[in-house]
Amino acid sequence: MNKYELVYVIDAALEDEARKAVIDRFNGMIEQNGGKVLKVDEWGKRRLAYPINYKTEGYYLLVNFESEATLPREIERTMKIAESILRYLIVKVEEKRSNVKPRPVRVAPETQETAAAAEAPAEAEAPAAPAEAE
Image (cartoon, rainbow, N blue to C red; front, top):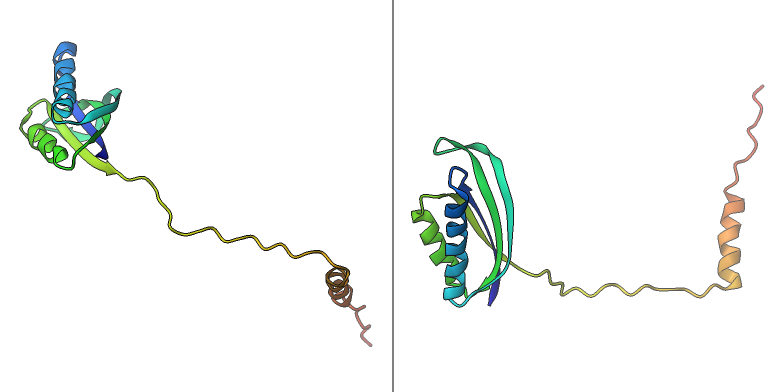
């Protein structure tokens, strides 16, 4: 099963009961097709960045769910038909994996030779007194 995120915008003109019915419809659709709704985050009524069908406000929702790979296409098909949905986006969530092993940290043992070598160049680099011009 794959993990997905679904973000959709419902028409803000809908009543609370109608909005709840739309949310329950799509959550039920996920459950009926063998998926599992992990989290529903309602962002609430917000102003749209640009008018969609002459509407300037929408009710935003974020749904995290797990399902087979065929379910997102079915959800998109249903959302295209629904008049109460202004916009939607389904994204597959991939866990970050790294095949690269971290570099081992090399620690050199501190010896008298390395300590003396570190001090010697510092003394040699001291600026010489400027020569006086005649």
